Image (cartoon, rainbow, N blue to C red; front, side):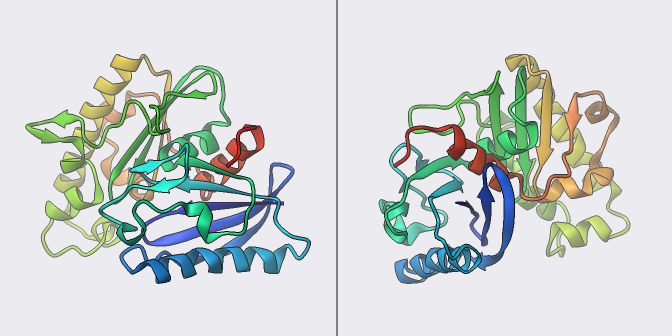
Length: 264
């Protein structure tokens, strides 16, 4: 029985997997990512206790999906914008000694939705920030620490960086007074805001696809649920897929654990 954990900044999502298949989803736990070390540790320990309540026979390993910066080879937090109180700490220290794997959340998303099909595949997550990963014939293109080699968030774009134009903060900045992307999606009179977002995304992904010769790009994240609002003609021409799989990062992390022989 494998515990898969998607360590987002707002919630820790988790589920149990057995023989590579989803066995039981578990309740989300507030991540407390802006709190002190004790609160953050307690959040992760709560996830483990929840898992044990559904698997009395025990847990044989833990698969993590974690945003960066993070050392995915050693399992060490390197973030300043969230989980700052545990920067430099080993995530494994919050759990009993078990085999563990650590995967970038964009890689986990792409693995979960693509089934690691052959070909040149890209994955993009549209949320608070802008995540991106590339996989070629089932292998991630990552750097020495395990982060995607071709990120998009900090890519030079329109005089700034891509995340300035393609993210939740970019959308909300374009519409003063809006408190959430969901509210903005339901608000009338915001067609121009959403069209501008779609145009920026199309420009960004067209260049990214051309440079890496990508055959398909999977798009997920909270903003992707409002795809009808930002689907421009230029976006519709790209080989995009908006998967319906719930919590793909949990599936991708569990799959990575199953085929990875180098557990911490």
